[in-house]
Length: 418
Image 1 (cartoon, rainbow, N blue to C red):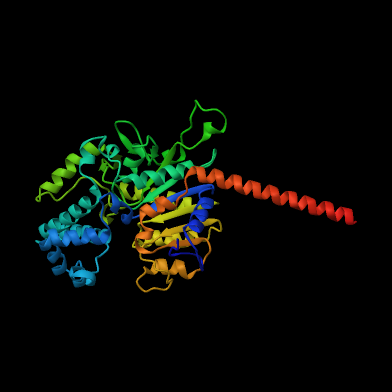
Image 2: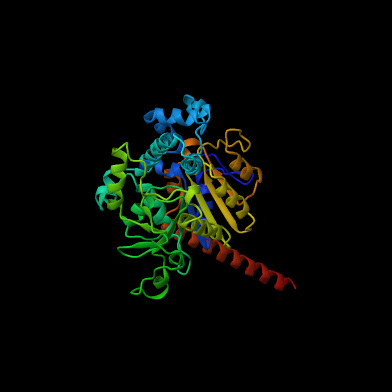
């Protein structure tokens, strides 16, 4: 079956060629995946476009206030395809700075700013809730066999591809939702996310240097892979800042605050979800997010590394810079699933950062497009099952053995001639 995909400057012929390429990459020493907002859409999440559209629809007064106060341009409120949504996180950042200044000068517009900011927060929270019933019960997501099937499949395949002694796979995400945590927990897969503790889970970055092993296993299986590493680059709905530290709280506890915030329009503070907000960046939040980005950068610099990217719209320039500079690592492989890619590497509709990567024509950069052919379910389907690895390795071993036998026969003939 033909697909829309290129590797460097060379189009891939079909899905079989793409799967073979992915199978070889998953054997590298270090494997990870970067998930953006688009990866959570099948689970009930929203893209930034959907988030902004919902905000404008449900809070028109707040949207118009932002326009009046010149925090957004008129194109942000245009209809249909003419709408150009702002970077929501940058907007929140700007509002935080303005809030600090307006309070200092005692301006009357503070109440309007708080109301508008809270409306944006509610839109962000609704976009990250996924399925509401998952929050009330610890088995909510586990009992749902459909919504998280692609997340589960990707995690299973990444873990199964690891060989004894190889590092556990990494998952980097810009999303605030708990899709990865719920998917992993439903399979009894350990998640190392930077937090340590049982009842009081405090951010402790040294946990990323730890792993799991099976003390009952024998031989190489003793040092197999039993966990994933998770770095939530922009924060999480289950994070809470208190007394200068960041803690992870249970979903049921977080839900009490979330539901109250969503139902009470007079509330202006959520109390959860650490966003990259300038007013607090130099405090604890800056340390946590800075440490997570350091781990991301360090991962990209490792030898023999593969990063799979899905659902990411290339709207975060700090991540784009890391991806570009990471190509200085001569053994790094990038595989990007981007639905808007149609095969034209110079298409104006593509994000500038993606066009830049395509223009390099680097054979270590593979881009898969074609609309629905590049969604999360396709990445899940394209990653080969563990059995395919074994069959492929046996076929390759046999081919090499036959080639070696042919070479030995040729050498024997040469000796006879001499």
